[in-house]
Structure formats: structure tokens, C-alpha cells
Image 1: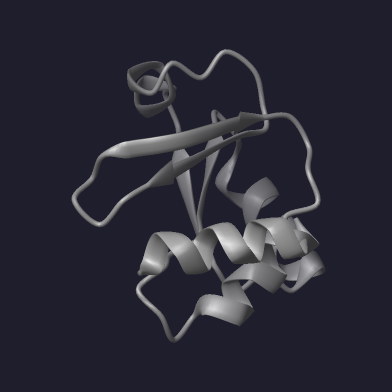
Image 2: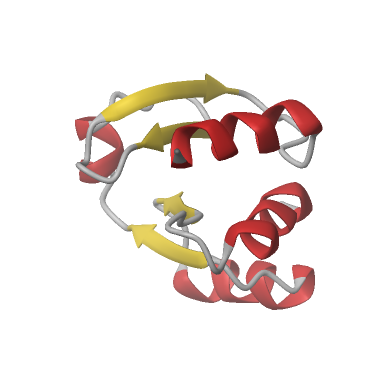
Length: 96
């Protein structure tokens, strides 16, 4: 996810975290993907799918915006280019 990496790099010194959760994937598969794509944001494993079920994930990729208090404030289903002006503006606004 190169566009998520760009968002991570842009906001890494701000109170924003990009976290990927791979669902029911093998650890080595995820590790190879992270290395081959040069991803530096946090990648976690949901080995049994319980976390995904808690968030109602029915298909992937699924993205959530969660505020600093842990409240779900937005969601997006499907592939998107996250390194766009509109997304950067939205994150800046949410940080205010």
C-alpha cells in the first residue's frame, strides 16, 4: 500500500497512526509483503479473524478513521489512493 506509506511518512511526527491489520494471513507472507514494498507503518496480524469481526469487516481492503479517544469517525471500503489532497486536508482538519 504505497499511498498509505506516503500518508504515514507525511504525518509520522504528528498524532496520527497508520496501522494495517492483515486478516488470517501467514506471518511470513505479511513479512515478505512489508519488506518488498518498503512499508514502515505498523502491520498487525489478525490470525483468527476475531478483530475483523468486531469491526464488521466483510471484505478487504477496509479502512477506518479512529479518533484519539478510540471513536470510529469514518470508514472506506475498497482500494483508494490515500495520498491525495482531499485526504491530507481531512487529516489536517481532524488534527485541529
